Image (cartoon, rainbow, N blue to C red):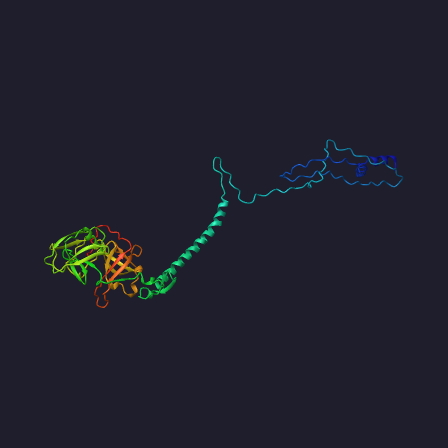
Length: 411
């Protein structure tokens, strides 16, 4: 190569580029990286662009014309770019630089922020769990108890309609054997609460005549008029007690000259009233006229044909006699503890005292507000076929509530 050609080859930019490439391929000792504190991770809205050095173009060899060549000196280092900052060394434990994930929207419904000055919202989550914990067991227990109560009531109704329970011997007997005159329970309790017969021949009884309410007493098999001789308030109260009256009676005298007799006097003893028959008339010639309670006025006619609708206020002495909640017979109020009815109401199957009750003061039948019966008395000579002595008196357990305007019937 000629001298002019050598100078051109050395000054060519391609040769300079190749020289620089060779120089840069040499291994240069690098300084150890300084420890850098890892910065907190931040969310970048735009993906970071990595700091990558510019790629150098590969060296291109220029062929010289054939001929003697001259060895060229080694490549020289290209000057560094002015004012270019050095790249910071990468931390050893940091993630590779690249695009970061942008967080999406928050899932669920956010709680509203309380307004200024308003009470904060309280979420009663525990209360709902408490209701679920106690409501279901309590409801179940109530339903079970209600079902047991209904079953118990049904069983009691069935037993009361078909059986009598002996409390002392703890057994059931058919209802037909209750008050049949035969002992079926060990303590005879099935024959105790029954209709009682009253023997009129051996007991002292009292009655008041329709005319002037003159006192008559039955003794020694006959009725006799009671003389006014020695009669006082104590004797008057004792006589009214025989009729079932407990109020203070009023009494006076009446002429006995027109009465057929016989006549008697009475005196009080420990057992009650003692009747002393007289052979003649009364010493004073008068008899006792007694009023135990204010009585109503009887109708002039013995029977009422046809009739018309009436309210309970027009006949306040009327009562409804009910057997097991069903109306059986009518009755008349004698006093707050006694009512009068007929003996044929109490047949063989209806002689149980505890199944009877009396309702007064209302024209509408109701089983809830009746008065319970204590005793039922019928005369011993009563005969169902002939209807002789067809009368009965009921003694009540509790006093009837009377308004004071009732006009009760005379016994």
